[in-house]
Amino acid sequence: MVQYETKIGDRWYPVVRYDTAHGVAHKDVLNHRGLREKVMLGEMDYKEALNLADADIRENWTSYKAQFLRRMGK
Image (tube, rainbow, N blue to C red; front, side, top):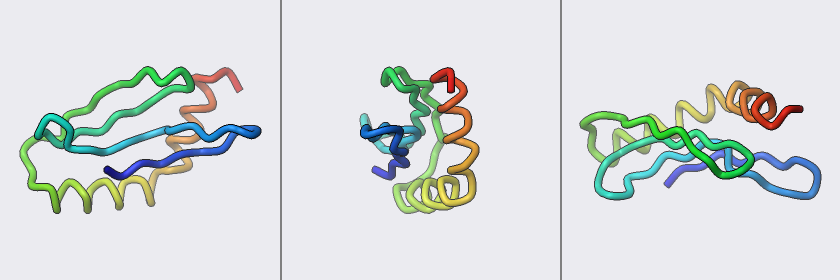
């Protein structure tokens, strides 16, 4: 699993998570209540999924954080 978290106040929140639960690579985009939007990644092996997750979070973490804060009403 690869996960980006952000700290708001004294609390850490998961923002986006890539994992292979249930044998399928997917991305969960979460809100502050833990509700998620699941995005299936299609057919790829675990190494490809890990590389995609790492690159996506490194390149897009600021966008994920901004989206998370908007959904939170901040």
